[in-house]
Image (tube, each protein chain N blue to C red):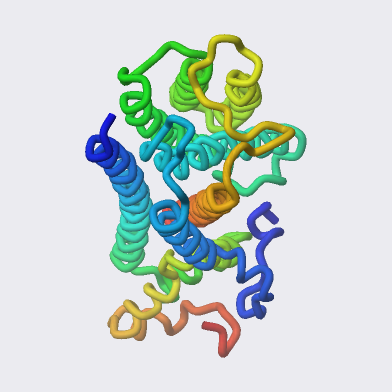
Length: 245
Length: 112
């Protein structure tokens, strides 16, 4: 029996409520509700930042959660890669690739929104400061993941090399996260630290809502990607069987 | 920077996020469409090869050790059409099914 079969409930079995609540459909609904509420909170409830960022600070309600979601996606890829190397049957098929793909997507998005904010705040589209540079480095390293995979024909070897690469590439994630905090001369603002969150309650609430919305979106798309990968895998097996007949 | 200029920057950033999310959903939908096309192509292949039992793709899916499970996984996503159901529906009005079924169907009675 394959991993997919081992994980799946038999057809017709009632779906439990907790399982249903985190199914892809519900996660999409949660994401839409949370992100919609985040937009409303950002523009209708939170005050304009008085610490110098001004109205452009509202970009951060989505910029920062997207950045966190990108790093979480890379962390998911790391865990899936480790699991795959330890127990190949453990991670759902396609999870690692989907997580890297989504991490890249969110990384690209955070770069663009960050550039827009940088232009407004610093007057330049790009600055070679630690956070931006390390995030760009992480993006390029993970983009190479697909180049490495694409260069290997043998499927088994491609999966193994891809997992090893995803583990090594994860080194860039903590470097990116801690770059602002520990590297000197950073222009990038640090609002939330281990000891405090230097913002008003409504701002913190909006930030949390947007972050949860982005996480829900990531989980929903990951589930959809896994379902698509499982469907494609099943089709390949059916096709092979039909060709043998 | 004046407020009007700041509003433009904020609007641009939010628009980028919105467009990117729409793009993400479009790409997911495109992959779903491609998968559906592959299912349809498989149905056509199944019919053109005149599989004796007429069960076609459904029988093939069930013959795969984890075929049903994969369909259950797929159903969790809620979007992938059931290849077996489609093939069964497609073969319902097909002459090959009725004519060729006799003498070739080695399944127990009552099995679909």
